[in-house]
Length: 143
Length: 143
DNA sequence: ATAGATGCAAATGTTTTGCAGGAAA
DNA sequence: TTTCCTGCAAAACATTTGCATCTAT
Image (cartoon, rainbow over the protein chains, first blue to last red):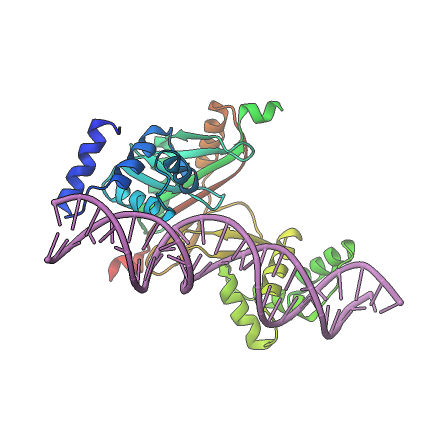
């Protein structure tokens, strides 16, 4: 079963928006929360079907969109052309291993500050950014 | 006609790789060089066809891939799901207006240095990165 | 003459949408 | 019983590939 907190947060969101609580939504939430994050739609779908064979791709996509709107998940995509979802938490960027796919999160206030300065310099009002570092992780360098 | 320098660079590349010089390749190069950069495949195709109606999408894509390999162009993609091409030049990142699509290039050695430090910290060997700032340009803020 | 290029149509891969039937409130 | 969901199949969309034909060398 999905952790209490998130389960309640979803229930609250559904109620506030006159949406319905369904087995499928509960199943997707549960599987999503059980992952370490950065899971692709495909992998999520595969895992959901292990427990609930009938669930379609469509429902996984729609439910993840819902979880994003409810503030429980966030969508990311790296250079491999697949959407990934992570459990929503404080702002950060990513370091991705181009060989094994390992993903590490990082946060750097110096970079955040520099971004603001750059936006200022060109008169832009910054809304968001995308910052990904690609390289070889320690294991993949060793081989 | 395409600028001498690039025309020759392409001819050299073609020769070295036993590839053929064709009207289509010359046409794509010419149109590409005449743009201010960050042109999409679609726009490039459209402009090429103004002068050379028979040229297909396939040839545009294949020729741009070739120009990238020859070091004359580089491929970029922002969050609008379309490939863009720019004339190859020194390393830089981009600031993109989410309303009008205006694209500004920037370079920040402080950020570059911070990236190296982050990669070091996690033991990654950095290969490349992707850094895009999205916001409203001065004009779009005014409206 | 021959390796390589072209353009069309079809395939790809991922995400979204239309719709008829099904379940929650 | 009404409103919302679901799953399937089909559509979207940008890019790539297969293939028969054409062309530069």
